[in-house]
Image 1 (cartoon, rainbow, N blue to C red):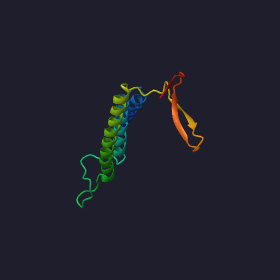
Image 2 (image 1 turned 30 degrees about the vertical axis):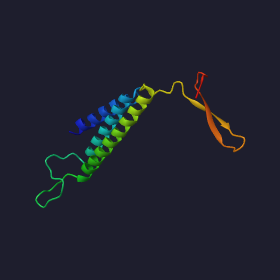
Image 3 (image 1 turned 45 degrees about the vertical axis):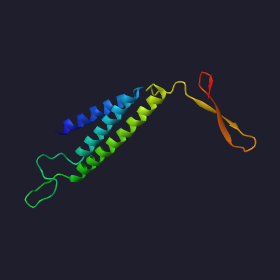
Length: 136
């Protein structure tokens, strides 16, 4: 049973890392979800896998299953669901604003700060790309 769980954690982690390194947002979101599933299985397995045992100690039973990893997994499921929802909304907003879901850093935008001589504060007026073309 432990070999099955450790193999599942390894496969989910490898698949999650592979998808996180992709250049599109949707595979990255799926990769983060797979990584959170791997962490959930790891937390669940850390409580020692015991079959057909109650989660609380009783007088009649000699052994029991530790309930703390189960509570941690339930909490992690709720947190990962909320995190996935937020990341999906951010990716959707990014796609709708730029009409592209690539996440590479080619053509990185850099800004030129111009200082106002009267106030001494900087103001971002001109944006340039690596190709040298100016846009506002």
